[in-house]
Length: 460
Image 1 (spheres, rainbow, N blue to C red):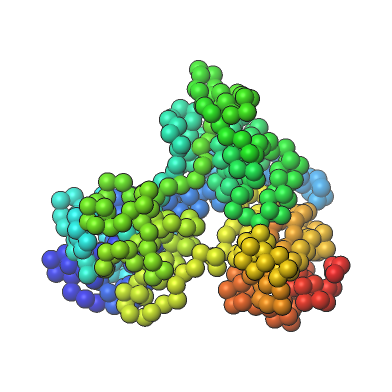
Image 2 (cartoon, rainbow, N blue to C red):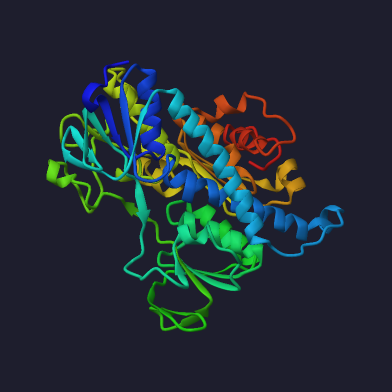
């Protein structure tokens, strides 16, 4: 490992979230000296106020639904309510175990962790608490923050961060914004017994996903009695002594107990000295080339700070890439279209690659083939009682370019879907592999069989 005398390092990383700590761990494996600067807790948003806690809540929600529905499966169970302090204790226990594990990894790796708020003072130097740390290379990994659309957060108007620490279930809640955060919290609160309404300005609940998934999710949410309004924006949010009134641009108003602002996340870059150091910043984002280099030599940016998909696993991949790039290994670039995406509401949505409209735009209407396999023919999905589908998008006579799935637990199937798309598999390639029966994974094989012209449990 290189000499660290006088706070001089091979790499100084500003931010200890998914992108930052992954970069640090990979860099020390490659013999680099690393300073990792973090003002909060290592692990960042994903571990502490994002991916992990929300998925813990979603699991508690699944248990609540199963206890209600036990009779359907021949089990005499009853649902007696939600103990939010106990739910939070379970959630926090998961976070604590993962956090201790991460701290152990960082410590055993010999990474210098600097606690405090860092600021870039020149392209090779970060200042923390009056002390300067210099790197041959600097990696910007300061992540993202909740967007609020100018709404005052406080009282009965909250973001996802506050939603994760609530001590009771709201009776009525309006969620401003669909997409990942909005539909996941809607799913949780409905399972916990709340009356939920989602307001989404775009025409569909999950605008970035294939239209067929949006239609099926909306159908499932109607069945679950989750209310939603799409294609309409809010005009105002007013708190009163007893609740909140949300006014919409179509003239309607909704009275509720709580408003969750879930309109996505924006870059966390303000006041960190990026522009003063000569780094290009575009509306808060830090643009890079495909090798994650900024416009300033030796300075890289990773994760949510870089325009594109905001996913923890994208951050991990970026961090590993940059460490290997600095070490001269010439790694393969991380391409957003090849990154798997999962939305963990009930039913779950999992996808990778091009949607059908994107494929038709890229290849032409007559150059795209589709296979949409309904889970009605999948034994394990019938056992679990879930509806949904697996949709394959193929370039005509070419490889599979997109996989789009919806159904309970389908997030766990996105690994094979990612291999299909990123290895440019043909349906015939996938069809020859035997998928275990009865599994939900089998639906991927069935869809490939059908697309290869030899359907088994589906019609051609």
